[in-house]
Image (cartoon, rainbow, N blue to C red):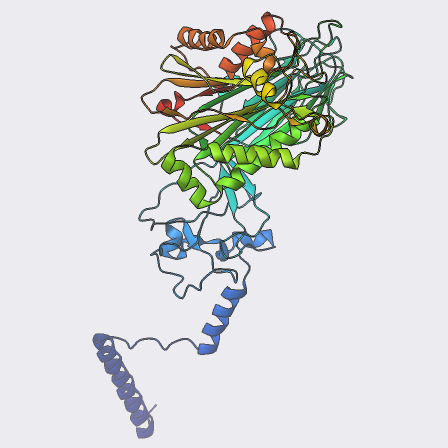
Length: 567
């Protein structure tokens, strides 16, 4: 069949067109393709607005698995650090993908621990992070609910542990106190029971030999209580803590302890729980121990009227700390109030920068202590209750040398030992003391020989007792203030503060010997300050003191061995 000339002409034209297109395409490939056209402005604007109004943490937990949780999309995210772009940010970041961190800006550390329970936020970086270093382990975290200075961003206080205080408030052993620190593993776990091998011995027939145990959960960052298969049960705020198989005498699951909890062992022994966060490093070792002791006549435990406290650092004065013992009479109300008010007054006075500079310049805080005692006395409204007050103030200068000064009212005392030399830091304000009898003689008729009490009290200086002070001008609240003791890093020094239950049976010289001998016997092992305080207290117990006894041991040798952790 013959092909028409028209078809041949069409095929030729098509072939030439294909060849022309092929040549044009090859020439374009060799020159390089032009850049792709930019995306439409409306789309870009929409993406930015979505990014601005997207919440920092999505309410929908499933969204966390999407691309919005990929922090490696920018150099800043690759280093584990990302800038907060929420509307509460103190400044607007125009270049959110820059990796350079400007000094003074607020940045947030993304601490990922494999769980979705909590997002750890809140660190202020002062210098750029050049490398992607692993995030340091965070031991204890509490969220701040108050507004802060970081542009309204809620951040967390990163602290290093927790302090637990236990007090037996009911039962045959009421008045006993124990103190635990989460980082002091030598004291953990603590066993509560009737046998002497227990850490907290409760002489109660309803308490099992080893009844319960308290320990610090370093993974969950909380204190926990476990019943050890006791016969009469353990209760936390009246709720049983036991194994599901009741009567099996098997250990229970751990129950979390919180500040203000009440632990009941059996039916009569009750233990109060106080928990405080530790957010600073204490450059000295601190040990505390106390015991209500037994009355002379009845053989029963005395009501506990001693209150011990220490604060380091003081709020607004980071290089200052205060240690105090308050021995109440007529009840513990005045002692508890003074233990709270006096440290607050000292901190308020030292919150003024000129006051701190004055103390550091002259190396003396006597005016601060006198003013704080005066304000505390004015704040107390206890007509028929009073207390002694012995407060040791320490501070550090720019060379990290330590200074110590003490103020006191009453017969609780403080001694120091510096390189083997004893230093008396307090004055005896009992009616029988020579200095007090001389002071009273200047106010009027002298005391008669053998007269050891005024209005039934053996003290003539104290806090509180407003009714007696109104009736008799011989009572005073003017404290004695000691000279300043300077402690360098090369010194070996300690301080011992105790209520009169210790000094009734042990002299100051003997107390210092007890500490030195105990430290010498245990020089080859790590000796906690709590063990030293307990050792001194046990000596008073063995000598059958008949009054409440509280001891605070402050070990300045820790300045050479490393800081301790505070509450």
